[in-house]
Length: 465
Image (spheres, rainbow, N blue to C red):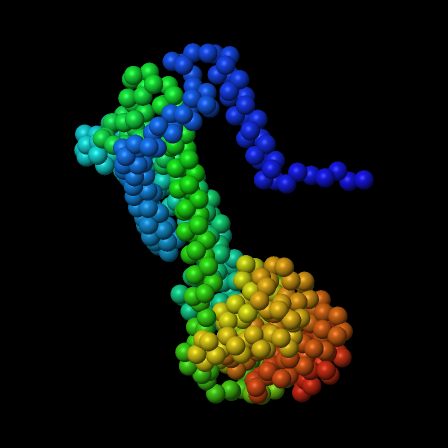
């Protein structure tokens, strides 16, 4: 018989209650109000403070100052972090200043700031100086975590810079920014209030702590400390809610990045293409011709160069010599991996790379098309919860629904059962729209099912077709 576990909320409240009880026991043990205040004393003092208008004025002043410092740090960290990521010279220029900000003691900053700007705006500057390096480095780290495979996908599908920033880069940045803001908020509150204790500006948390210490009002000292902790936690939660709202807006913002129909289809030709990795020759004087609107199956053993051939056509690999007449062609592609944005739905993944109709019209078209290839309502679920076969079908749907005149499918049916494979092939044929299709496969029956007009079997780097 399994033991029932307490709900997490109940367990957390129980733990908090135990700590409060231990706090009260310690107060009874010390029994010196001038040295220590228990939870009951703090609660009574807090009740008295809340009834005073000065309490709310103090909370508003300190909260406003520290929030302003963190807000400036957030804006500056985002702008300069993006600038440093885009232009390494910016990062080199900022590195000495950040080194100084991290290494100089906070007390030294406080003393200097008191000389320069006085006490009234002291906590703004100190909270900014503490929070900025954390947010700046979080932004840089997050941008560097952008998935290279998804950036390649954007390049193939001609996704615009703005849409790429709101999708691939944002979903690399978002977790790092959340963590950076959480740490920055906590550190900024500690440093900001410490600066107020030293500078003692009027109507601030620091002033109240200073005078409570000066007059040995231990209960008031504990009460103000609890207020500062509560405001810090609530401020951190507000920042996280703000980031979550921005994340939701990012999902809603991007759509099609194509504003005009694709160019007229044309033939695809490869002449004398040579490609090698190190000493290994993959293609040697390879030539092939793919008429516009044709369907071609590319077969051969693993490692022979099928994927490399598609990547060369897509412009993702460089070749040593030869020519490929794919310039100017709109391309959509299914990669060997699904390359989906995990937090987004199937519909949103398709919307990022598809269409040139008005956004609402295109969204309705995508949802309708996904119902042909996915179980009901799956298109509105995050792709991270879908099965491997369903994710593969989303990748195929994204390629077929994109505005292109050349579709390349790298083993598009891998991981699909027989029924799903037939449904996917029917979907491809329905949404082909006269485009040229190249697909790689290990199974001859798939070439037949796809009505391939020609089959190229890669067996050695010397072959041409």
